[in-house]
Image (cartoon, rainbow, N blue to C red):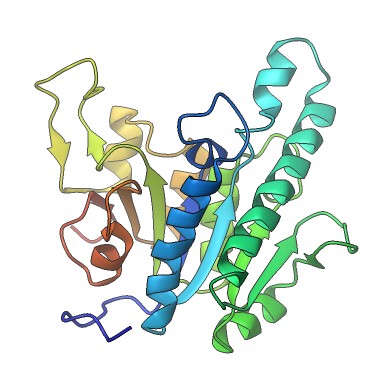
Length: 244
């Protein structure tokens, strides 16, 4: 693939994918067509030498908080959720490897038969060598979301940009599905996100980004070319930053 017509603004990015993004129209699990489409978008970034790390959730299989709400011990439920993220990470690894990419899954909990342990310096070295790195098992701790894991890993690997992929093309003043007059924000500060309780990510993740000056772009992963436009610095979705 030839280089994009517009120069890249970001060279190392972390992409946050929800587990639900892998379901497509299914009630649960992984839709093979959806994971191939996501892999194709990621592959296009790799083709132009963007260094890509990915944090993936597990909500299409298990949601720890949901299980805990139904009476399960929260720590046990969160550990089950971590295992679900490993399943998703392996599926994404397979889809990317079928496209010829070198991919490493790194887990925050030990499961050495199927993936590597997360070691920060090793993760950075993988990225420098052009490998795609998929971070699984969140932070490895209960009570922390994969949003928080995404913010933490983006900071740890010195990413230029954190991308949160959703099914909505940015952050809105209200729910755009319910309110046709909802306003999409082109840019926001982290303080505005917290003060207005906009629900971009959980508060821990937002504060981590704010305190470490990590720019965040929220975009619609279902739009073809959205990731490429984001790394080119184009007006795709909503940019959340301290530098307004």
